[in-house]
Image (cartoon, rainbow, N blue to C red; front, side, top):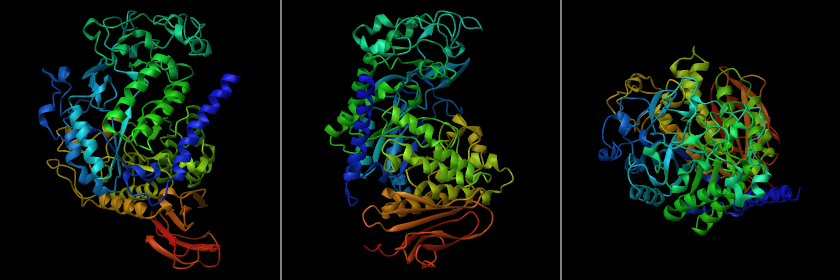
Length: 614
């Protein structure tokens, strides 16, 4: 009980430090280092798919065919040639969109090609890491990364790194043959097990990463043999393939077979055959503090997105987060933003809050928001779905103010683009209606509480055709036949041209919304009150309040195909309004009552023009 109380105290101290620092900063801060996490508009980029700034690194310094180099610009699942120099060359494009931070998919050296259930693929996405200390040569050099960070900072743009602590590339193999027989290429064919089956007894103390292991940390390697489920080995040609060198020892991995993402194996099982790290081992925690602290020290980056955080034991993050915040503060980075991926396919904020609290993560990606917007603008769900998501903001450690730092999004590189999601839900919708729904989603993303994350290419009308690799289009001229044939929202696009059109209507609309968000503190830092919701498609309205002046900004959306006229409650001091976007009445009908008139699939942003009285 004493250990549990100490752990809870430490967890709350970490989150209190994050929230406390945020609340103490003045709204007038100008320097990019002074901006709070909720001040940002984040642009999420896969370096391989953005811009090819240096064709000499396309092969990553390797020789041979695509199965050796990983480079095949015509294949969906291989490197296409984008790199860090390409991103640097397009910083003006990113800044013009209104983005103030770039989230880079992992840039670390990856295993160029590995197999999953017999099919080869390349590490172009960055999540199959072998060397955690250097940039993958397909993306350039460490010096290219340093130049990109320096150039971004010169424009006031922050840089967030996508990091992985749950696993490495698939290097370790098992001596037992899978069901299909040997030889084999991927551990994904091995079911999760203990000796004697999943329901068998724990092999030894520490099997579950329990207190017995932590209390005997100095003897950890003896308590947790690497062969308690399968017999691991490293192929001779890869025996020293990982950096730092300690990562080459199978003792630091679970070696229990493929996860079903249920129960204990969600934490201790292999993810797609990848080598699942034993993050409950103190040596692994210390190793990752050293690795990622080094990136902060060397490059002065501004934050981490933590991949697959849901599949890592909470104790790891309680030590890791504190160490990273301290490392960043020592480097002169007071608002280092850390947010974890806790994937979920339901609009369930409580699910996210449980992980944020248990793992002492300052923030988590707001999957609840993403799913709610997808359902609401898919044409079928009640706007009450959004209301329930926001009502649960109080569940996060730090409450509603902590929720301001949750990165929100509508689609991503794993789950598919938002336009594809809505098109799939509403196959009868024409391109004009689909465009209206995408614009409405962007308005929700950039005006409602949270830190908006824009998925690269959405501003160019990319729709895609599915999840994962089908949602990772090239911004430069693509050679992938499937990408060349895809339809887009907005004006016609020739497949022989790149996709950096700053006149595209979606690019311009996002830029306008980002500018509005930048100039209105209420849209960045203001607490949010739901004013109207509906048990069917229709109205959703909120008020957000300037944290210094308490000025009210009313934001309203119509998710239906019918016009809406409705009165909502507002502050009694909000009597006159100005239109920041859409249609706004100039005056309140009466103290505390405001009339909204919304066309189908439209939105409005209406700001009270006077401060409340004493």
